[in-house]
Image (cartoon, rainbow, N blue to C red):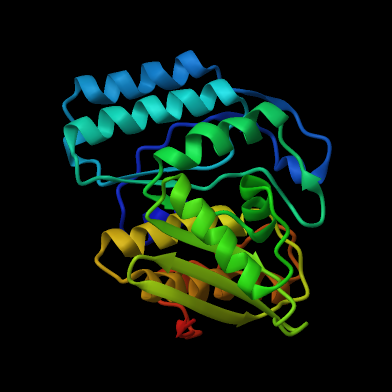
Amino acid sequence: MPALQLMGCNVWPIHTVEFSNHPGYGAYTGRVVDAAAIRDLVAGIEARGLLARCDGVVSGYLGTAANGEAVLDAVERVKRANPAAHYCCDPVIGDAERGVYVDTRIATFLRERGVGAADIATPNHFELDTLTGTKTPALSKLLRAIDTLHRMGPRTVLVTSVRTDDVPEDAIDLIVSDPGGRFRVRTPRLAIGVHGAGDMIAALFLAHILRGETPGRAAARAAASVFGVIRRTATAGARELLLVEAQCEIATPAARFTAQPL
C-alpha cells in the first residue's frame, strides 16, 4: 500500500490478516481476518458507487483459502462495475529457502482458482514451480512453465527471484511474459534478506501497467524501485524495508535497468 501511495495511487486497503509483524520472523501475534469481514467491506465500497473508479485489484498473502474466495468475489464485483479493471494475483505460497509456508489449502486454491482468475500473476521462481508442478533449473524449462501458467489464465506473468543455472551468483533475474514477448530484467544481488520485496514489486508492476507501460518496461521500472529500497535498507543495516526513508526510490529510482528480449 505505501509503495502505491508514493506512486500517487489512491488505494482502498482491505486487510486479509492483522499481525504484529511479518510471520517470517517466527513468533507473531494477531489474527487472520474473517472472510465475511472482507466481503462486508467490499460491499460497503460498492454501495458508495465507487467500484467503477477502481482500475485494479492486487492480492497477496491470503491467510485462508476462504479469504481467497472473498478476493475473487471482490474482483468479480469490480469487473462488473469496470470491465477494464486488472486483477493482479501475487500467489504467496513460499520461497526457495523455506519451502511452502502457507496452509496447503491456500496453495490448492491458488493453483485451482486464484491464478486462473488473474489478468496478471507474479509468482516467485519457487511459486511458479509449485503452481505448475515442475522443476525449472534451466531457463528453457522455466519458460515452458510460464507457458503452462499462461494456459491456466493470466495474460501477463512476472516471475521474480529467478535463479536458473544461467544467472550469475551476484545477480538475480525477473522474467516477464505476455503475448507481446518475453523479457529478462537482471539486477545485482544484494547481501541482505528482507520481507516484503515480492509484495512491493507486484504492486509497482501493476501500477506501471495501469499507467500504460509495456510489461517489459513496467518490470524494469518496478525492479529499479525495489532494488533502490533494498540497497538503502542494506546500507542502513536495517531488517525492514525502509519505505519511508527510501521513498524517493519508489517514484524516481536512482538505478536504471533494461528489459532484454528472450
